[in-house]
Image 1 (cartoon, rainbow, N blue to C red):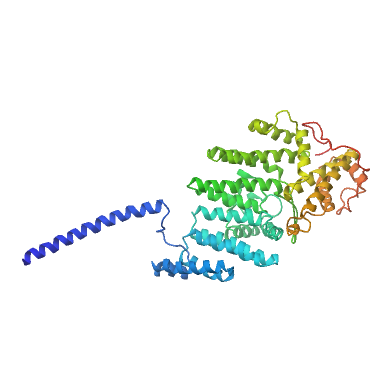
Image 2 (image 1 turned 120 degrees about the horizontal axis):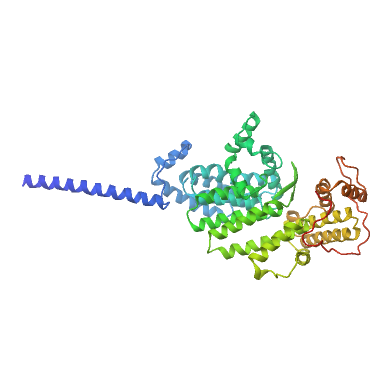
Length: 499
Protein backbone atom coordinates (compact mmCIF):
# COMPACT_ATOMS: atom_id res chain seq x y z
CA UNK A 1 0.00 0.00 0.00
CA UNK A 2 2.83 2.29 0.88
CA UNK A 3 4.56 1.52 -2.44
CA UNK A 4 1.27 2.08 -4.34
CA UNK A 5 0.77 5.48 -2.76
CA UNK A 6 4.31 6.52 -3.64
CA UNK A 7 3.79 5.42 -7.24
CA UNK A 8 0.56 7.41 -7.41
CA UNK A 9 2.37 10.53 -6.19
CA UNK A 10 5.09 10.08 -8.80
CA UNK A 11 2.51 9.68 -11.54
CA UNK A 12 0.61 12.73 -10.35
CA UNK A 13 3.83 14.77 -10.31
CA UNK A 14 4.64 13.63 -13.83
CA UNK A 15 1.11 14.50 -14.96
CA UNK A 16 1.37 17.92 -13.32
CA UNK A 17 4.67 18.52 -15.08
CA UNK A 18 3.22 17.53 -18.42
CA UNK A 19 0.21 19.81 -17.87
CA UNK A 20 2.46 22.71 -16.88
CA UNK A 21 4.56 22.15 -19.98
CA UNK A 22 1.43 22.08 -22.16
CA UNK A 23 0.09 25.22 -20.48
CA UNK A 24 3.36 27.02 -21.03
CA UNK A 25 3.40 26.06 -24.69
CA UNK A 26 -0.19 27.19 -25.12
CA UNK A 27 0.50 30.43 -23.24
CA UNK A 28 3.36 31.33 -25.56
CA UNK A 29 1.03 30.90 -28.53
CA UNK A 30 -1.68 32.97 -26.85
CA UNK A 31 0.82 35.73 -26.06
CA UNK A 32 1.91 35.85 -29.70
CA UNK A 33 -1.72 36.09 -30.86
CA UNK A 34 -2.52 38.80 -28.30
CA UNK A 35 0.52 40.78 -29.42
CA UNK A 36 -0.45 40.40 -33.09
CA UNK A 37 -3.95 41.65 -32.30
CA UNK A 38 -2.64 44.55 -30.19
CA UNK A 39 -4.39 43.28 -27.05
CA UNK A 40 -1.37 43.47 -24.77
CA UNK A 41 2.08 44.95 -24.40
CA UNK A 42 4.86 42.69 -23.17
CA UNK A 43 7.86 44.92 -23.87
CA UNK A 44 9.18 46.94 -20.90
CA UNK A 45 8.88 50.70 -20.68
CA UNK A 46 12.04 52.49 -21.71
CA UNK A 47 13.35 55.73 -20.16
CA UNK A 48 10.31 55.88 -17.89
CA UNK A 49 10.36 58.00 -14.71
CA UNK A 50 10.60 56.10 -11.38
CA UNK A 51 6.96 56.71 -10.47
CA UNK A 52 5.81 55.19 -13.75
CA UNK A 53 8.12 52.18 -13.33
CA UNK A 54 6.71 51.64 -9.84
CA UNK A 55 3.08 51.78 -10.90
CA UNK A 56 3.51 49.54 -13.94
CA UNK A 57 5.76 46.91 -12.35
CA UNK A 58 5.19 46.81 -8.59
CA UNK A 59 1.43 47.31 -8.48
CA UNK A 60 0.81 44.58 -11.05
CA UNK A 61 -2.85 43.64 -11.37
CA UNK A 62 -3.93 46.24 -8.84
CA UNK A 63 -3.26 48.98 -11.40
CA UNK A 64 -6.51 48.17 -13.18
CA UNK A 65 -8.60 48.39 -10.04
CA UNK A 66 -7.06 51.72 -9.03
CA UNK A 67 -7.39 53.11 -12.56
CA UNK A 68 -11.06 52.09 -12.72
CA UNK A 69 -11.80 53.99 -9.53
CA UNK A 70 -9.98 57.05 -10.85
CA UNK A 71 -11.87 56.86 -14.17
CA UNK A 72 -15.20 56.81 -12.34
CA UNK A 73 -14.18 59.90 -10.37
CA UNK A 74 -12.89 61.62 -13.53
CA UNK A 75 -16.20 61.09 -15.33
CA UNK A 76 -18.07 62.55 -12.36
CA UNK A 77 -15.84 65.64 -12.46
CA UNK A 78 -16.33 66.00 -16.20
CA UNK A 79 -20.11 65.90 -15.79
CA UNK A 80 -19.72 68.73 -13.28
CA UNK A 81 -17.39 70.74 -15.63
CA UNK A 82 -14.63 70.52 -13.01
CA UNK A 83 -11.86 70.09 -15.56
CA UNK A 84 -9.00 71.44 -13.47
CA UNK A 85 -9.42 68.68 -10.88
CA UNK A 86 -9.52 66.20 -13.74
CA UNK A 87 -5.98 67.16 -14.77
CA UNK A 88 -4.43 65.60 -11.67
CA UNK A 89 -6.62 62.53 -11.91
CA UNK A 90 -5.74 62.09 -15.58
CA UNK A 91 -2.05 62.39 -14.72
CA UNK A 92 -2.41 59.53 -12.23
CA UNK A 93 -4.34 57.47 -14.76
CA UNK A 94 -1.63 57.88 -17.40
CA UNK A 95 0.93 56.67 -14.87
CA UNK A 96 -1.20 53.64 -14.14
CA UNK A 97 -2.12 52.88 -17.77
CA UNK A 98 0.54 54.42 -20.02
CA UNK A 99 -0.10 51.87 -22.80
CA UNK A 100 -3.77 52.73 -23.33
CA UNK A 101 -4.07 55.43 -26.05
CA UNK A 102 -7.56 56.52 -24.95
CA UNK A 103 -6.14 57.76 -21.65
CA UNK A 104 -3.80 60.16 -23.45
CA UNK A 105 -6.42 61.25 -25.99
CA UNK A 106 -8.97 62.13 -23.30
CA UNK A 107 -6.44 64.02 -21.22
CA UNK A 108 -5.09 66.00 -24.19
CA UNK A 109 -8.61 66.78 -25.44
CA UNK A 110 -9.67 68.14 -22.05
CA UNK A 111 -6.66 70.43 -21.92
CA UNK A 112 -6.89 71.72 -25.50
CA UNK A 113 -10.65 71.99 -25.82
CA UNK A 114 -12.41 71.95 -22.45
CA UNK A 115 -10.00 73.69 -20.10
CA UNK A 116 -8.54 76.19 -22.58
CA UNK A 117 -11.91 77.82 -23.31
CA UNK A 118 -12.32 78.66 -19.62
CA UNK A 119 -9.73 81.41 -20.17
CA UNK A 120 -10.54 84.64 -21.98
CA UNK A 121 -6.90 85.71 -22.38
CA UNK A 122 -5.55 84.15 -25.63
CA UNK A 123 -2.11 83.74 -24.08
CA UNK A 124 -3.50 81.64 -21.22
CA UNK A 125 -5.66 79.68 -23.63
CA UNK A 126 -2.66 78.98 -25.87
CA UNK A 127 -0.75 77.56 -22.91
CA UNK A 128 -3.37 74.87 -22.40
CA UNK A 129 -3.54 74.06 -26.11
CA UNK A 130 0.24 73.70 -26.13
CA UNK A 131 0.05 71.38 -23.15
CA UNK A 132 -2.46 69.16 -24.96
CA UNK A 133 -0.17 68.94 -27.99
CA UNK A 134 2.90 68.28 -25.85
CA UNK A 135 1.10 65.54 -23.95
CA UNK A 136 0.41 63.62 -27.15
CA UNK A 137 3.68 64.38 -28.91
CA UNK A 138 6.16 64.20 -26.04
CA UNK A 139 4.64 61.65 -23.67
CA UNK A 140 1.96 59.52 -25.32
CA UNK A 141 4.04 58.70 -28.42
CA UNK A 142 7.10 58.07 -26.25
CA UNK A 143 5.39 55.07 -24.66
CA UNK A 144 3.18 54.17 -27.64
CA UNK A 145 5.28 54.86 -30.75
CA UNK A 146 3.21 52.53 -32.95
CA UNK A 147 -0.29 53.61 -31.89
CA UNK A 148 -1.84 55.07 -35.05
CA UNK A 149 -4.70 56.74 -33.19
CA UNK A 150 -2.25 58.97 -31.31
CA UNK A 151 -0.74 60.22 -34.59
CA UNK A 152 -4.21 60.96 -35.90
CA UNK A 153 -5.17 62.83 -32.72
CA UNK A 154 -1.99 64.91 -32.80
CA UNK A 155 -2.56 65.74 -36.47
CA UNK A 156 -6.16 66.71 -35.64
CA UNK A 157 -4.96 69.18 -33.00
CA UNK A 158 -2.90 70.97 -35.66
CA UNK A 159 -5.55 70.72 -38.35
CA UNK A 160 -8.57 71.67 -36.27
CA UNK A 161 -7.59 73.47 -33.05
CA UNK A 162 -4.81 75.54 -34.61
CA UNK A 163 -5.72 75.44 -38.28
CA UNK A 164 -9.42 76.24 -38.31
CA UNK A 165 -11.14 79.37 -37.04
CA UNK A 166 -13.59 77.83 -34.57
CA UNK A 167 -11.76 79.16 -31.51
CA UNK A 168 -11.94 82.90 -30.83
CA UNK A 169 -8.17 82.86 -30.22
CA UNK A 170 -7.27 80.96 -33.41
CA UNK A 171 -5.26 83.87 -34.84
CA UNK A 172 -3.23 84.08 -31.63
CA UNK A 173 -2.54 80.32 -31.85
CA UNK A 174 -1.42 80.59 -35.47
CA UNK A 175 0.73 83.64 -34.78
CA UNK A 176 2.42 82.10 -31.75
CA UNK A 177 3.13 78.82 -33.55
CA UNK A 178 4.38 80.56 -36.70
CA UNK A 179 6.80 82.67 -34.67
CA UNK A 180 8.14 79.59 -32.88
CA UNK A 181 8.75 77.85 -36.19
CA UNK A 182 10.20 81.01 -37.72
CA UNK A 183 12.91 81.02 -35.05
CA UNK A 184 13.92 77.51 -36.12
CA UNK A 185 13.27 77.46 -39.86
CA UNK A 186 13.50 81.11 -40.90
CA UNK A 187 11.21 82.71 -43.44
CA UNK A 188 10.11 81.13 -46.68
CA UNK A 189 11.22 77.62 -47.62
CA UNK A 190 13.31 75.64 -45.11
CA UNK A 191 16.95 75.12 -46.06
CA UNK A 192 16.80 71.35 -46.27
CA UNK A 193 20.54 70.93 -46.89
CA UNK A 194 21.30 72.84 -43.72
CA UNK A 195 18.73 70.90 -41.69
CA UNK A 196 19.88 67.51 -42.97
CA UNK A 197 23.60 68.27 -42.70
CA UNK A 198 24.13 71.18 -40.28
CA UNK A 199 27.58 72.70 -40.52
CA UNK A 200 27.42 75.64 -38.12
CA UNK A 201 26.86 75.78 -34.40
CA UNK A 202 23.60 77.68 -34.89
CA UNK A 203 22.32 75.14 -37.42
CA UNK A 204 23.16 72.26 -35.09
CA UNK A 205 21.38 74.03 -32.24
CA UNK A 206 18.23 74.53 -34.29
CA UNK A 207 18.21 70.95 -35.57
CA UNK A 208 18.65 69.65 -32.01
CA UNK A 209 15.72 71.79 -30.90
CA UNK A 210 13.60 70.48 -33.77
CA UNK A 211 14.35 66.90 -32.78
CA UNK A 212 14.30 67.14 -29.00
CA UNK A 213 11.59 69.70 -28.30
CA UNK A 214 9.27 69.42 -31.31
CA UNK A 215 10.01 65.76 -32.17
CA UNK A 216 10.42 66.69 -35.85
CA UNK A 217 12.81 64.67 -37.98
CA UNK A 218 14.26 66.88 -40.77
CA UNK A 219 14.55 63.89 -43.13
CA UNK A 220 10.89 63.03 -42.66
CA UNK A 221 9.93 66.67 -42.96
CA UNK A 222 11.64 66.84 -46.34
CA UNK A 223 10.04 63.54 -47.39
CA UNK A 224 6.61 64.96 -46.49
CA UNK A 225 7.36 68.22 -48.30
CA UNK A 226 8.56 66.41 -51.41
CA UNK A 227 5.39 64.35 -51.48
CA UNK A 228 2.78 66.97 -50.59
CA UNK A 229 4.49 70.37 -50.81
CA UNK A 230 5.70 73.00 -51.17
CA UNK A 231 4.39 73.42 -47.62
CA UNK A 232 4.66 76.45 -45.37
CA UNK A 233 6.19 74.83 -42.28
CA UNK A 234 5.38 77.79 -40.08
CA UNK A 235 1.66 77.07 -40.43
CA UNK A 236 -0.19 74.24 -38.63
CA UNK A 237 -1.41 72.48 -41.80
CA UNK A 238 2.14 71.34 -42.62
CA UNK A 239 2.43 69.73 -39.19
CA UNK A 240 -0.99 68.10 -39.46
CA UNK A 241 0.15 66.53 -42.74
CA UNK A 242 3.50 65.52 -41.21
CA UNK A 243 2.00 63.63 -38.27
CA UNK A 244 -0.81 62.10 -40.34
CA UNK A 245 1.75 60.91 -42.89
CA UNK A 246 3.81 59.23 -40.13
CA UNK A 247 0.71 57.52 -38.78
CA UNK A 248 -0.36 56.50 -42.27
CA UNK A 249 2.88 54.57 -42.72
CA UNK A 250 2.03 52.50 -39.61
CA UNK A 251 -1.71 52.03 -40.21
CA UNK A 252 -2.88 48.42 -40.29
CA UNK A 253 -6.65 48.73 -40.74
CA UNK A 254 -8.81 50.37 -43.35
CA UNK A 255 -10.50 52.55 -40.72
CA UNK A 256 -7.15 53.93 -39.59
CA UNK A 257 -6.16 54.71 -43.16
CA UNK A 258 -9.47 56.49 -43.84
CA UNK A 259 -9.00 58.83 -40.86
CA UNK A 260 -5.41 59.67 -41.75
CA UNK A 261 -6.09 60.16 -45.46
CA UNK A 262 -8.89 62.55 -44.57
CA UNK A 263 -6.55 64.63 -42.40
CA UNK A 264 -4.01 64.81 -45.24
CA UNK A 265 -6.27 65.91 -48.07
CA UNK A 266 -8.33 68.23 -45.88
CA UNK A 267 -5.14 69.91 -44.64
CA UNK A 268 -3.83 70.18 -48.20
CA UNK A 269 -7.10 71.78 -49.26
CA UNK A 270 -6.85 74.28 -46.41
CA UNK A 271 -3.20 74.98 -47.25
CA UNK A 272 -4.23 75.71 -50.85
CA UNK A 273 -6.72 78.29 -49.60
CA UNK A 274 -4.43 80.03 -47.11
CA UNK A 275 -1.13 78.18 -46.86
CA UNK A 276 1.18 81.12 -47.46
CA UNK A 277 2.35 83.75 -44.96
CA UNK A 278 2.25 87.26 -46.35
CA UNK A 279 3.22 89.06 -43.19
CA UNK A 280 4.39 87.77 -39.80
CA UNK A 281 5.04 89.87 -36.73
CA UNK A 282 5.16 88.93 -33.04
CA UNK A 283 1.49 89.88 -32.69
CA UNK A 284 0.16 89.61 -36.26
CA UNK A 285 -0.12 87.11 -39.07
CA UNK A 286 -1.61 87.60 -42.55
CA UNK A 287 -2.24 84.70 -44.90
CA UNK A 288 -2.48 84.26 -48.63
CA UNK A 289 -3.24 81.40 -51.00
CA UNK A 290 -0.63 78.76 -51.74
CA UNK A 291 -1.61 78.14 -55.36
CA UNK A 292 1.64 76.32 -56.09
CA UNK A 293 0.60 73.45 -53.84
CA UNK A 294 -2.42 72.46 -55.89
CA UNK A 295 -0.72 69.93 -58.24
CA UNK A 296 0.32 67.94 -55.16
CA UNK A 297 -3.15 68.38 -53.65
CA UNK A 298 -4.69 66.99 -56.83
CA UNK A 299 -2.22 64.08 -56.81
CA UNK A 300 -3.04 63.29 -53.15
CA UNK A 301 -6.76 63.03 -53.94
CA UNK A 302 -6.07 60.72 -56.88
CA UNK A 303 -3.70 58.56 -54.84
CA UNK A 304 -6.21 58.14 -52.03
CA UNK A 305 -9.03 57.31 -54.44
CA UNK A 306 -6.85 54.62 -56.01
CA UNK A 307 -5.98 53.15 -52.60
CA UNK A 308 -9.55 52.91 -51.30
CA UNK A 309 -12.14 51.75 -53.78
CA UNK A 310 -14.93 51.66 -51.19
CA UNK A 311 -14.47 55.34 -50.25
CA UNK A 312 -13.70 56.43 -53.79
CA UNK A 313 -17.03 58.20 -54.38
CA UNK A 314 -16.75 60.20 -51.14
CA UNK A 315 -13.18 61.27 -51.89
CA UNK A 316 -14.17 62.03 -55.52
CA UNK A 317 -16.78 64.56 -54.41
CA UNK A 318 -14.19 66.40 -52.33
CA UNK A 319 -11.76 66.15 -55.25
CA UNK A 320 -14.25 67.66 -57.69
CA UNK A 321 -14.96 70.59 -55.35
CA UNK A 322 -11.24 71.19 -54.89
CA UNK A 323 -10.71 71.22 -58.66
CA UNK A 324 -13.52 73.72 -59.20
CA UNK A 325 -12.06 75.95 -56.50
CA UNK A 326 -8.68 75.71 -58.21
CA UNK A 327 -10.18 76.77 -61.56
CA UNK A 328 -11.66 79.87 -59.99
CA UNK A 329 -8.70 80.72 -57.76
CA UNK A 330 -6.24 80.58 -60.64
CA UNK A 331 -8.66 82.65 -62.72
CA UNK A 332 -9.08 85.46 -60.19
CA UNK A 333 -5.31 85.57 -59.72
CA UNK A 334 -4.80 85.98 -63.46
CA UNK A 335 -3.07 82.62 -63.93
CA UNK A 336 -5.26 81.74 -66.89
CA UNK A 337 -3.18 78.95 -68.38
CA UNK A 338 -3.41 76.95 -65.15
CA UNK A 339 -7.09 77.83 -64.75
CA UNK A 340 -7.81 76.36 -68.18
CA UNK A 341 -5.65 73.33 -67.38
CA UNK A 342 -7.66 72.48 -64.26
CA UNK A 343 -10.91 73.22 -66.06
CA UNK A 344 -9.96 70.63 -68.67
CA UNK A 345 -9.20 68.20 -65.83
CA UNK A 346 -12.66 68.73 -64.33
CA UNK A 347 -14.34 68.10 -67.69
CA UNK A 348 -12.30 64.95 -68.20
CA UNK A 349 -12.75 63.41 -64.75
CA UNK A 350 -16.26 64.63 -63.91
CA UNK A 351 -18.08 65.19 -67.21
CA UNK A 352 -21.54 64.78 -65.64
CA UNK A 353 -20.91 67.57 -63.13
CA UNK A 354 -19.68 70.22 -65.52
CA UNK A 355 -21.28 71.37 -68.81
CA UNK A 356 -18.67 70.68 -71.52
CA UNK A 357 -19.67 73.78 -73.48
CA UNK A 358 -19.17 76.17 -70.56
CA UNK A 359 -16.06 78.33 -70.95
CA UNK A 360 -13.66 79.45 -68.27
CA UNK A 361 -15.10 82.96 -68.35
CA UNK A 362 -18.68 81.73 -67.99
CA UNK A 363 -17.81 79.54 -65.04
CA UNK A 364 -15.78 82.27 -63.35
CA UNK A 365 -18.55 84.86 -63.72
CA UNK A 366 -21.08 82.42 -62.32
CA UNK A 367 -18.81 81.88 -59.32
CA UNK A 368 -18.56 85.64 -58.82
CA UNK A 369 -22.28 85.73 -58.19
CA UNK A 370 -22.04 82.82 -55.78
CA UNK A 371 -19.04 84.16 -53.90
CA UNK A 372 -20.54 87.58 -53.23
CA UNK A 373 -22.65 85.71 -50.70
CA UNK A 374 -19.82 83.40 -49.55
CA UNK A 375 -19.52 82.93 -45.77
CA UNK A 376 -16.21 81.02 -45.64
CA UNK A 377 -13.50 83.41 -44.47
CA UNK A 378 -10.63 81.83 -46.43
CA UNK A 379 -12.56 81.74 -49.71
CA UNK A 380 -13.76 85.29 -49.18
CA UNK A 381 -10.25 86.62 -48.58
CA UNK A 382 -9.00 84.84 -51.70
CA UNK A 383 -11.81 86.28 -53.81
CA UNK A 384 -11.22 89.80 -52.52
CA UNK A 385 -7.47 89.63 -53.04
CA UNK A 386 -7.93 88.28 -56.56
CA UNK A 387 -10.34 91.09 -57.46
CA UNK A 388 -7.99 93.71 -55.99
CA UNK A 389 -5.04 92.37 -57.96
CA UNK A 390 -7.05 92.45 -61.15
CA UNK A 391 -8.08 96.03 -60.38
CA UNK A 392 -4.44 97.14 -60.09
CA UNK A 393 -3.49 95.35 -63.31
CA UNK A 394 -6.33 97.08 -65.15
CA UNK A 395 -5.07 100.42 -63.85
CA UNK A 396 -1.57 99.63 -65.13
CA UNK A 397 -3.09 98.82 -68.55
CA UNK A 398 -4.97 102.13 -68.56
CA UNK A 399 -8.30 100.30 -68.28
CA UNK A 400 -9.73 102.49 -65.55
CA UNK A 401 -13.36 101.45 -65.92
CA UNK A 402 -12.52 97.80 -65.55
CA UNK A 403 -10.23 98.60 -62.62
CA UNK A 404 -13.06 100.36 -60.85
CA UNK A 405 -15.37 97.44 -61.58
CA UNK A 406 -13.03 94.94 -59.91
CA UNK A 407 -12.52 97.31 -56.98
CA UNK A 408 -16.28 97.58 -56.53
CA UNK A 409 -16.56 93.79 -56.72
CA UNK A 410 -13.96 93.44 -53.95
CA UNK A 411 -15.73 96.05 -51.83
CA UNK A 412 -19.11 94.38 -52.43
CA UNK A 413 -17.81 90.98 -51.31
CA UNK A 414 -16.16 92.57 -48.25
CA UNK A 415 -19.31 94.46 -47.27
CA UNK A 416 -21.62 91.50 -47.80
CA UNK A 417 -19.43 89.18 -45.73
CA UNK A 418 -18.92 91.63 -42.86
CA UNK A 419 -22.63 92.48 -42.92
CA UNK A 420 -23.50 88.84 -42.36
CA UNK A 421 -21.33 88.49 -39.26
CA UNK A 422 -21.68 92.03 -37.85
CA UNK A 423 -22.68 92.12 -34.20
CA UNK A 424 -22.55 88.33 -33.85
CA UNK A 425 -20.30 86.29 -31.58
CA UNK A 426 -18.14 85.29 -34.55
CA UNK A 427 -17.30 88.82 -35.71
CA UNK A 428 -14.01 88.96 -33.84
CA UNK A 429 -13.09 85.37 -34.69
CA UNK A 430 -13.71 85.42 -38.45
CA UNK A 431 -13.74 89.13 -39.25
CA UNK A 432 -11.80 90.34 -42.30
CA UNK A 433 -8.89 92.80 -42.27
CA UNK A 434 -9.83 96.33 -43.37
CA UNK A 435 -10.22 96.49 -47.14
CA UNK A 436 -7.62 99.24 -47.46
CA UNK A 437 -5.07 97.07 -45.64
CA UNK A 438 -5.79 94.24 -48.06
CA UNK A 439 -5.33 96.59 -51.04
CA UNK A 440 -1.99 97.69 -49.70
CA UNK A 441 -0.76 94.10 -49.17
CA UNK A 442 -1.86 93.05 -52.66
CA UNK A 443 -0.14 96.06 -54.19
CA UNK A 444 3.12 95.41 -52.32
CA UNK A 445 3.23 91.88 -53.73
CA UNK A 446 2.18 92.88 -57.24
CA UNK A 447 4.63 95.73 -57.93
CA UNK A 448 7.80 93.57 -58.08
CA UNK A 449 6.11 91.27 -60.61
CA UNK A 450 5.25 93.99 -63.12
CA UNK A 451 7.39 94.99 -66.07
CA UNK A 452 9.03 98.38 -65.47
CA UNK A 453 6.73 100.28 -67.84
CA UNK A 454 3.58 98.92 -66.22
CA UNK A 455 4.98 99.40 -62.74
CA UNK A 456 5.73 103.04 -63.59
CA UNK A 457 2.22 103.51 -65.01
CA UNK A 458 0.62 102.07 -61.88
CA UNK A 459 2.77 104.18 -59.58
CA UNK A 460 1.74 107.27 -61.54
CA UNK A 461 -1.94 106.37 -61.36
CA UNK A 462 -1.76 105.84 -57.61
CA UNK A 463 0.64 108.71 -56.84
CA UNK A 464 3.19 106.31 -55.37
CA UNK A 465 6.89 107.00 -54.76
CA UNK A 466 9.45 105.56 -57.20
CA UNK A 467 10.80 102.01 -56.83
CA UNK A 468 13.01 101.51 -53.81
CA UNK A 469 10.83 103.44 -51.36
CA UNK A 470 10.55 101.46 -48.15
CA UNK A 471 7.00 102.41 -47.24
CA UNK A 472 4.00 102.93 -49.48
CA UNK A 473 1.57 105.70 -48.62
CA UNK A 474 -2.17 104.96 -48.38
CA UNK A 475 -3.33 103.49 -51.68
CA UNK A 476 -5.50 105.81 -53.71
CA UNK A 477 -7.03 105.42 -57.14
CA UNK A 478 -7.45 107.72 -60.07
CA UNK A 479 -10.16 105.52 -61.59
CA UNK A 480 -13.35 107.30 -62.68
CA UNK A 481 -16.81 106.29 -61.48
CA UNK A 482 -17.91 102.84 -62.59
CA UNK A 483 -19.41 102.39 -65.96
CA UNK A 484 -17.96 99.26 -67.33
CA UNK A 485 -17.64 95.54 -67.11
CA UNK A 486 -15.77 92.85 -65.26
CA UNK A 487 -15.32 90.69 -68.33
CA UNK A 488 -12.33 88.40 -68.25
CA UNK A 489 -9.60 88.17 -70.86
CA UNK A 490 -9.78 85.47 -73.55
CA UNK A 491 -9.26 81.89 -72.45
CA UNK A 492 -5.61 80.98 -72.09
CA UNK A 493 -4.53 84.63 -72.03
CA UNK A 494 -2.87 86.44 -69.18
CA UNK A 495 -2.43 90.07 -68.23
CA UNK A 496 0.44 91.68 -70.12
CA UNK A 497 3.36 93.11 -68.30
CA UNK A 498 3.63 90.63 -65.45
CA UNK A 499 6.84 88.75 -64.85
